[in-house]
Length: 260
Image (cartoon, rainbow, N blue to C red; front, side, top):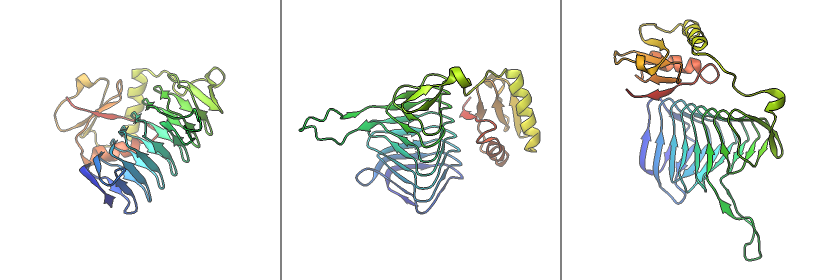
C-alpha cells in the first residue's frame, strides 16, 4: 500500500490493493480520510492534497482522482474502472452515487495558449448531489448535478442536472418527459415491508438488526437500527451489520450512518 500523507485516517475492514497510489500533488497529501469497509482497486491513482471517501465505497481498477483542491466523496459510492475524477476546481460528490466505467468528471478547462488569445481557461467547482448516477462513458463538465439526477450511457453533460431528471445525448438534455424519472415515489409503509423482506432474505439476526420508520426510534442498546424514512442507520460496526449492509448494496438499499 503506497500512501503518502501528513494525516491518514483509514477505517475498519478497508482494503486497498498494493498497486494503488495515494498521495498529494507534489509529494505528501495534507489529509487522506477513507471510511470503513471500502475497496480501492488495482492501479488506482488518488493524487489529491485533501481527499475523503465514505464508508462502503468502491473505486475500481485504473481509476484516476486528481486535483489540488479538496475532493470529497460520500458513503456508498460505486466508481467504475478507468474513471477520471478531476478536483482542480474542487469536487464534492454526495452519498449513494454511481459513476459508471470510463466516465470523466471535470472541474476545469485549460490548455490553449492565453497569450495567443485562447478564451477557454477556467476552474469551477463540480458538485454532485446524493443518489446521482452517471451510467457509464459519461463526460461531465463542472456542473451542479442535483439529487437523484441521472445521465444515461455516453452522455456529455455541459449544464446543471435538475432533481430526479434523466439526461441523455451530446450535449445531454432531459428525456424524463419521454421515459420518466430515475426514482418513483415510495411510501414509508412500502419501504418497511420491503426492508423486512430483505431482512428475511439476508437471514439477518433480528436480535442485532432492527428496522424502524424514523430515527426517533433509535436506541443505544447494541443493535443496528435502520430508519427507512431517512435511509439512515445507527452504526455499531458489528459483523452482522456489515454483512447486512453488504447484502443491501449496491442496488437493494443504501443507508448512511447517523449518531444519536
